[in-house]
Amino acid sequence: MPLTLTEPVAQSTDTREYLWTLNFGPQHPATHTTLRLILKLDGERVVDAIPDIGYLHSGFEKIGEHLDYNQYVTVTDRMNYISPLANNIAWHHAVEKLYGIELTPRCKYIRTILAELARISDHLLCVGTAALDLGAFTAFLYAFNQREVLYDIFELICGARFTTSYTRLGGLMYDVDERFIQRVRAFIAGLPKTHSEISRLLDRNRIFVDRTKGIGVLTKEDAINWSCSGPVARASGVTRDLRKDEPYLAYADIDFKVCCATGGDVYNRYLVRMAELLESLKIVSQAIENLPAGPVNVDVGGRAVLPDKNQVYSTIEGLIQHFELVMWNRGCPAPQDECYAAIEGPNGELGFYLVGDGSNVAYRARCRPPSFIHFAVFPMLIRGQTVSDVVAVLGSLNIIAAELDR
Amino acid sequence: MKSIEETIKKLAGRFPGVPFSASWFRDNCRVHVPATIIAEVLSYLKHDCGFDFLADLTAVDYADYPDSRDRFAVIYCLTATETGDRFVVKVFVNDPDPVLPSAVPLWNGANWLEREVFDMFGIRFAGHPDLRRILMPDEFTAFPLRKDYPLRGRGERHNFPVLTRDEG
Image (cartoon, rainbow over all chains, first blue to last red; front, side, top):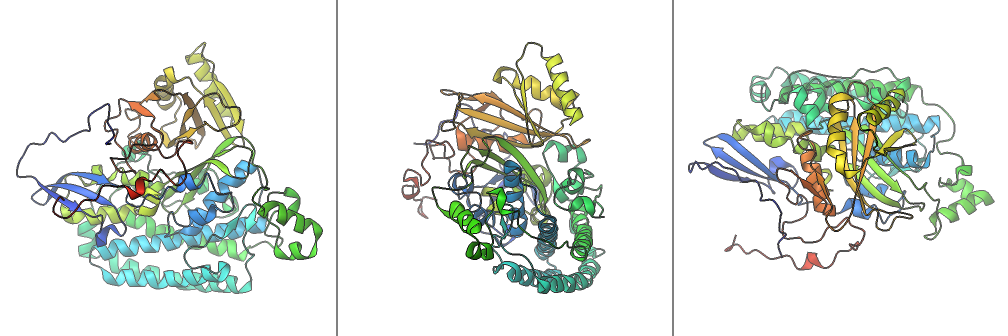
């Protein structure tokens, strides 16, 4: 039985009969994933756009109420799969706040490095595909070449290229080794060249600039009013960056700038992402050169943390701890309270609202998905633009449908 | 932290006689607000206390929660873009007709977030411009994030209407 609404669905009052309706997606190369737009066109002008989402809804928040705090990290991989490590870190950042666990310095630094590598991998993809959608194929290939190096680094640390699931409550799956440091150093040396290649291809490219400048303009007031965050908001002049505003992990120790622009159009979003690539690289190089020694996991005495395998096999405390945590009817209870914690994800503020009920499974695991919030702005940005601008604006918002629908 | 204490004092001064119960957990300050005055409180927080950014709007179903008295809570995570302060406002609503005034007049960003809460919990927002389901299909009748909805669903997945090419 269809759902009856108490208030009628807002219908467009436009009665001009020559308006043409174009169905964009859910399967379209430029949406990159499954999302649908119903465009109302007057010739080539977009009069209105109605997003229709939910094609990829998989009930992640419901699953979060049935998996324990370590198991759920595998699901967060599948949210924004362009930067899964950032999701892993955001999830355990929130869980550790709920438990009140303070990480070891080494873990903080490694997580900082990985969060920034995830940001680089996200921005490379976003810049590359945004150019691809506008017909610039070469920039896309340069960007993907470097992403391949990143995937190799991720594979080295956790065995998976895509679904990393690298963080654990109070630590990481494994410590990193010397090879990781060398690979990251090599990446730091290699990225600026790619960056300048992309930048020389696009920054002053007549076609690219014509198709992006002044398109999809978001003002600063609107950005705040529509809850935008991350590069989308910073391109509109909002100077908000959680890495500076509420420093988490090791960001307080590191020298970096917040990249902002004031134009608020597609071109400025591209510029902000390009600038952030270099800032992230700066953060990674500072963190990797100052990587503290010491344990990567919080001490076993904390009771919430999985001990490493050496301890499990050689000490009785480690064995008991391991047993307590992995048996389905045991586990470390979380406080019976709730908290909101967010990190500056590649796409914007990536937060989790967690409700603990005194068990080792979240009572509610709400994710604040930046893609969902940014996509709500899309109809406003595209009104009055042309059909060809749809892909430009969509690409600049970096909508990842798996995170949009969860 | 200090500015948040001041905000709570200002709130108590502006709404005398209202039992605001503020609690701290880690660095989150949470205030429980009665549903009857939530629109005024949010408007006051936005216009007079600087909380101009709605970071998140979500809901929790407390049906199975230990020692809970109310069924649902709607949670507004507010942020001040000037100072970076965070403030969590929590409102309880109950069956049979969970309804709250919409926050869309204050924040356009609340539009889809409220639609999602309606879709997942069945909490209605009076005055919302377009309160439709957003993630679930329109013909879906249940509210999946309620605690009485089973993890594997009630078989809806196998009974979706099939649309053939001729009908479509």
